[in-house]
Image (cartoon, rainbow, N blue to C red):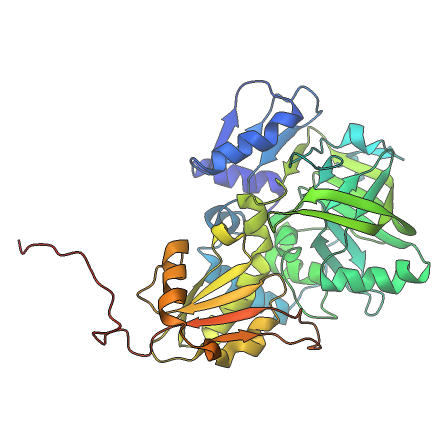
Length: 420
């Protein structure tokens, strides 16, 4: 489903609000922040005085809108479909002569063409936080896409932060050896491509082929050497080069600022913009949309684990922890340590807390109560060790469960209500 169709589907369900008054780009982050804390709808800004596009914020800021944009009933159905697509990827549908739908600018001044903005007070530059980076994996030739934060650094230059494991390896194997890496950057991509930018599929798997299996013939690509999804609102082509600069500070998912002393530059050779474009703005830092997108990858892994482990009843990645904590609701008597090795591999989640079904997994106070009252021994706390391949040390798993929560000494009290 292309970006405009996803927006229309959410609007038809009453999940989009139009902002009628004129605003500047700088006003958008606060307006989105306010909406998140009220009705949490997507916002459409049509009258932006310093932008040549309508701006859409918070489109993917809820599970309902993510699923609606992918024609899925819920996350369980979506990730089951994703796993089928990973198992049976499809050949790309390519269409020639599609370039007339775009206006192309060579060597663009990105600060003028892109309505990028500062999302946190101390962001050093405007940031492109909705950019999906496309590159070929040099070891397999497979297409890889992922979200990468990008500092708009002047002229046609972006500073990129290749943070996740696969794109970091791709950059190290090319740019790190003095070579340029051909890339594309997509803003407002079809929802199947957006999903693939958020989830892991394993080395050697072509993410575009999985997206094609998800989208069917409605999803198509250009016939360029590096194929671009048609109907993408903004598509930039260029090169990441072995030229490094300080990048940041910028607000990130942890609720902290991030500063990198040495990140590579991307030089944009051309940008293709749809006529009357819609610019997808993902509020950086701890926003509903940022957290919902970042947690799609962990949710896909946890959903597989839930299907394979009957004792894992459900899971939550609560917004109050920025998607960095997973709360696992398990059956009585189940020891969650049995899952530890698989949990450590979930890259963006810092910690896990297992609780009984009598604990409200979405409530910070409930989860803290369970830790205080039920994680009583040192062996209830497990940590990932240094030297584990692909695992950051210091991840934690807290077993805050009771084997028999119906025992009187472990049963939670309830407010007395007189008989009716």
